[in-house]
Image (cartoon, rainbow, N blue to C red; front, side):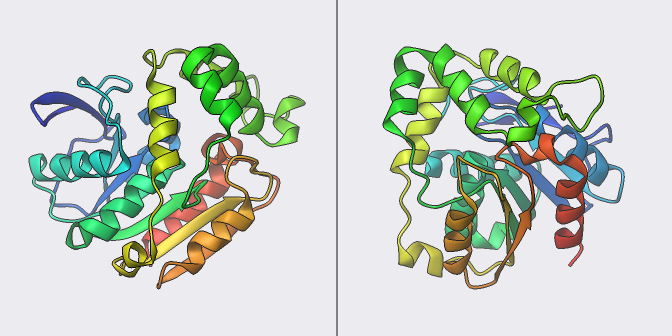
Length: 264
């Protein structure tokens, strides 16, 4: 369904159920150059189990109109405007990669609107290699290949896909190829320059969960652990044999982790 956010139509996947702000709301926020489709399984589960699930396409991504934002804070403000337009007073935020930074930003600057945050494939700061950033700016096809190779655990490259007859890596490459020109470089730069300080983290007072893939080369587990240590009420859950694209690599384990956290 579409919402009007900052005068532009924004697409939100509601998991096959009508939008209902009277239910507890969980918002899923995708990463750089991705869209709502990375959350299909998780959003659908929560939508059919008592939640008002909203998997968003950020501005400039997927089916949403408008220009992509150039900072994590601007994406965070857009997300709060989405809550306002949907008459949602408070929501749990689940973010992956860049989406985890957006969730962090909302929890720190708009804490009264956030009930819980789950941060998947996360670190803060989230440094981006010069090689990847340069490729994203000038040779996007190379950058897509880098993300696809670095973003999946080794067994995915050998064909061990959790869903028989499909390929997570091919699907992810196609998703990146469908992104609008310049979006990946824009989003990676937003991640690169987002460096929260201790005062920022002191403002986060909601329960938090960090989910780390033990084979994640993009946001290594040790960086996720360091992030969790800076949040007052935070626990860490590590997924064995899982890389950065954990929603596709380990969909069942990721769902179980979110389900256990959000019911607490």
